Image (cartoon, rainbow, N blue to C red; front, side, top):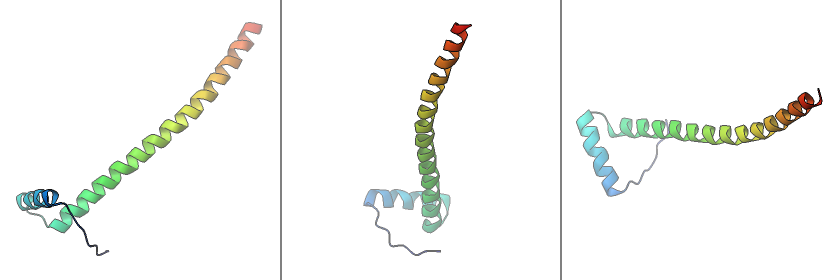
Length: 76
């Protein structure tokens, strides 16, 4: 486990304190869960962007192959 010094904007801190009191969990646990959730979100965003880029590359290649098949069909 790593120890961090964390600076939060006052409104964010106040809201987090209110929520942790309501949920009856430690601030540390709340922040860990929040960072974990945000990491998951960012990983999915990165994967989405990566898949979008790769899909565009495959799409271009697929169109070329489709055109070649159409040419072969036209020759018959």
